[in-house]
Image (cartoon, rainbow over all chains, first blue to last red):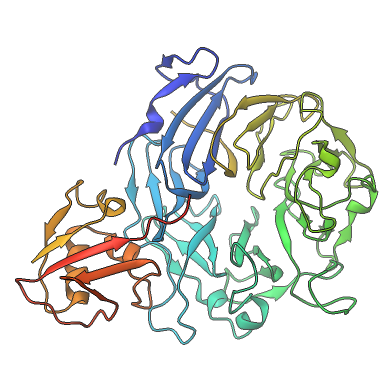
Length: 395
Length: 86
């Protein structure tokens, strides 16, 4: 397979370059019609681009392995063909396909068939070949060989309560039911979380063999009046703070939440957002070092749910105090715009100050080198953007 | 027998539009294709051995969804994929 990602050009001059400087962030952009990779310098002033790779393929998620800085996994499907995983062990210079992509068990009683791989998560640092994948229908899959072969996580897929917890049969959501936000505790490879749209947040402390619900305190608008249902919620994106893993944040269909384990109830921290903006959105991103800082990109969740910028005034919002208050970040963004940023389409780097990036369904990538204080459009005219992920390339 | 490959699957066949495969049933043929071109079958058939929606297999002029349908060496199999969407 070709390696378009080894061919770079400057976004400023539109001329070919041998490659971007080492040490700068890479931003992987998965779109409805292929994969692009953006690179910048450590100051995040100049930008380079490579791609498209897999032109015409639906790329739900593309992730660079933080454990080696070389392995790229791409969750792909194509028109009506079955889903698969493409993998590169040389930063996209060459590609191969998983020899055994994620799939449910042949002949299983529910006769589930995986339509798409929606989410990819690298495993724990002590398990270098391990990856997790979430799908639609809401299956969980694991690879122990860097994405070459995948096995269903039976403790989840065959859990006696799966048909209650999951959307099954998954006929309700326009884009299909989704399993996302697979999280591995950096202190313990056996401690996992996952999110389901719809279904809620679930936790396992035994490497996925058994699971419990973790939805207390979250609102749900999709069920008949019941003040505190146990499951059936709609987390859009769940993040664990890497430096304080007992703290999780969640952008839900029904608000922004935080939990500090061992608490078992989420606190709605979105109530401090401006009422005219609200606390509905898809992504939530965390500062790599400060557990009190998180960014969101609100969307209009009123009326028929346009899912565009509230009032046609695009902005990210940041909290610096764990959700006690929020600040609007719109310098450089268009004064008027109806942007939609999907749940995987916002990311942060690990520089100081932190770079924040998001991609829109209108095919634009925006970047901020200063934690959201100012924004610059890096590239436009891409296909609908599904995912934007930061990565650190090694070599 | 000859098997016609649609463009979305030709990345597996080194861009060849027609390849050879053997088997007594459509299922055999698809498994032989997967042996020759690893990964191709799962793009066509799901894990429950069902032809994926909008994928079609023709035996001569007949659309076949039953993968146990018999084929003979002189038959021509055509795999097609709908190109609906935008």
